[in-house]
Image (cartoon, rainbow, N blue to C red; front, side, top):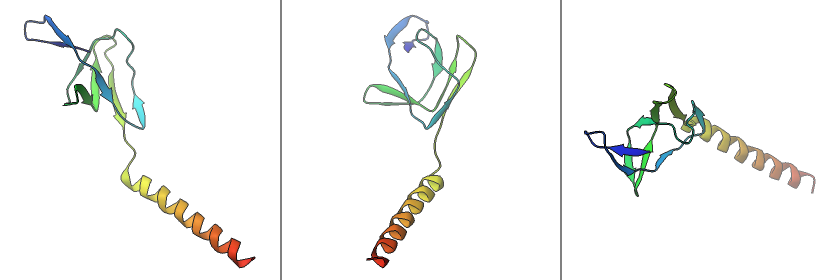
Amino acid sequence: MEEYAETTDRVRLVPVEMRGFTFEGSVADGDRVRASGRMRSGTLRVKKLHNLTTGADVSAKQTSKIACAFVIVFFVALAVFAFVMAHQHA
């Protein structure tokens, strides 16, 4: 992404990162985008942006913490069940 000053002259290229489990919308090389976010280690981290080339909004979808906790609890319970079953037959 290029960062522009108010005079619309190109100032510098800015790397952009969008993290998520899935994404809605798309961006291709060469597309112009409008984005805002937080700069971290020289990279602009965004949760959503607007693709000026296609007119599409692009966003990252995160997994919920409840869903992650449910999956972890399920696998722990499965491991405990397998352990108990293995020791019952021993």
